Image (cartoon, rainbow, N blue to C red; front, side, top):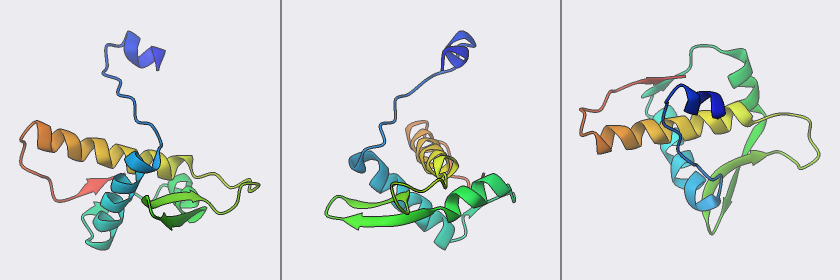
Length: 104
């Protein structure tokens, strides 16, 4: 984060709370389901998505590890969800016409 700040790039806090992650996860699901999101074939991202499971409770839907003790990682999947959410936010805030496809 310090390197990004040194390069004068904007940094935004994105807490991985249910309140923040549930709508972002729903956005990612809808993009995958509607085929408005593509994946470039990155095996690390595919592996991290495969290691995630969907948790649904009264706070919404979000991805989590399949079990607490697993060695499987989901960090790239979480980053993809957060990235898509921020990109969609900027499209709305900047009033730019929406693009049809996001690529990760």
